[in-house]
Image (cartoon, rainbow, N blue to C red; front, side, top):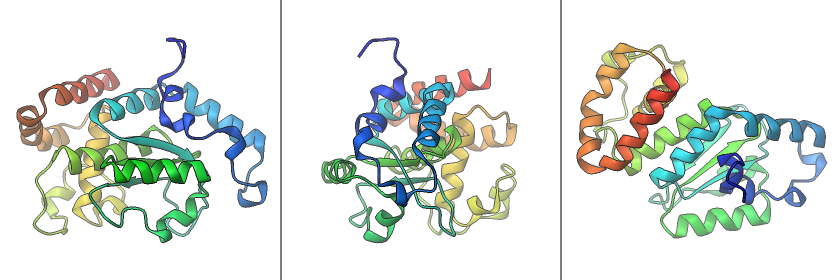
Amino acid sequence: MKSHEPVLFQSAVFSDTPRESFPPAEKIDRDAEDRKSMLRDWKNDGEAQKLAKLAYALGVGKIILANRDMDKDNFLGQYLYAGDSHAFRETSRKPWNLSTRQLATIKRALRSDRDVILLSFESSAATLAHELGHYINNRLEGLSRPESSHVTESMRRVARFDEYFFQNKDEFYAETWARFLCGKKNRTLFRYLKRPLGRLRMKHPQKTRLILELAKRCAN
């Protein structure tokens, strides 16, 4: 592809979502024009483009953009860790309305020990940042493995997250990295990540440099 085309359009997000493989109209609550508009929004979202480029540079196997049925949880993204033998259970698969090609792509990636990020058409750069936060914590060991899933009161003081992100340490850590990646100016959060970033530099110096560069650009 030409070098001036957006990064996200060069990724698996769109290469694995051919127009002809969109789910039937009766399975989604918007028409074709709505989908085209959402695709344009993603294409023009510079922050999402930067995050997608970073995700692949850090080692994410695939990013898949797909339709998703809204449910009571109403989440717009999902991180699939290849190290989890049940990463893509049938119960997780159903809401996404994935094409046969997308399903095959996900299975190949997971079997090759490569993690996958699923995103809804309605998601934003913040959703991608959160799912990438899961990847940083799981694959790069960005924060210490929790001895328990309980979120402490001191952790709650790091940032004003929605209550959803305080349900367990996994969600808390992912959102912490997401806020950092998006350049949110929060001194308490930056202090909290000082030691984890030090560990990352020791284990993954090049990848840490990319993380810091993106956070700095987004903060400006």
